[in-house]
Length: 446
Image (cartoon, rainbow, N blue to C red; front, side, top):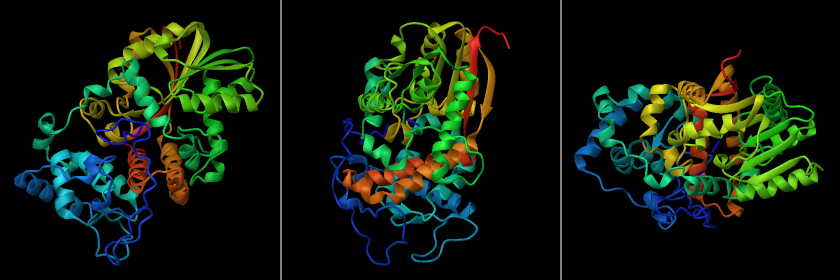
């Protein structure tokens, strides 16, 4: 998974870190939640300007948004009960605390406003992932068809600053992964693997996550035929678990990252395992790959490349491959038409989590890889496993809330992060998103 842009006006990796104490709700004003309560008046405007301040809105636009939103929530049976009432056993509930602000933000900024309203504490849910799953499952019904056709007029476009040029890609990656190794350690399992696991059975338990991550990694290594003496290139180091596992098989690994913090910790983990002679961690852009390799593996990195650079990415993969070599990819995917709509739109995820990124479609992967001279010879989807992975991360993050606070991440950041994890989980549970492992080889041979 891949950067929370911390505030629309501040691109510093640590801009959202603060030791502010979450404000307490007024007694009886809201149902208990697993996230810290926030009042908009207490939000640090320097760090979160678009959360602390309501956007300028036209009364008519807010009224139309309010009508459409309330009708959709009622139709989906998501309307919140009175404060303190028990949630419905049939549907999760969305409880709106400030209807004017909620409708105004959505009317002005659509789904970005929906997420910012949550960050501002203007609505809550005792089952955030459940609410978002229902909404994701009916996403095509939420906006009337005439308004969907006018999407280009009202949906915000992606800022030019998020383009994945060499400098832009470095900024985008570092602003997510260089937040704090301790933050990621707070909710990931001990393997520090930040991508979908592959479980033997459901429901998954956090205790099974390390072995499930190893199962995912081993399947990728098997796809790429990694063994004794294999020259392996990994694009996207993470914190080094795949490189460690490949080196333990006897491979010679070169692994690339743009994250200084990830590189530092990965090198320490590799040294501690006594495998420094087999693994080289490089702070290097994929466009600057040197050498040729028997195998290339890239796990959930294509989502950070950006559509503009997909041809460059697949050309770089092809160029790095030695004759007869194999490429194993793990990629999140979405439907092609949804991808085309999303590619031109600034979303909550692109603003607060992964600026410059775009989830590809299977069609886009097939077309761009084929144009680079690569053939897809295996393609396995396992989206339900990502939903479980995200659930475990979210539950772990929630359980370690006090620890996250001691790391300096304020209540607004915590609400944003949990919204991101729940939003992503909902995408997989509703099948709006999928995750796939693919094997690519030269030419068209099976």
